Image (cartoon, rainbow, N blue to C red; front, side):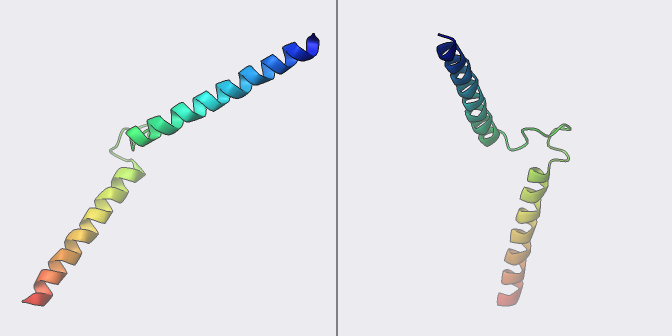
Length: 68
């Protein structure tokens, strides 16, 4: 009897942790700045996106300049 109760408690804990992690995983995908305390103004993800865009623009600019 006590073994059954302990087993059920462990299963409830395991499924609770699993549900929380799944929920956290999907929320992270929806919002790239999830977890940033100051919004996206200082978010590393947002900064990385801006840096990638700038590099793309520089490549395009260099490609156009070299073709002339």
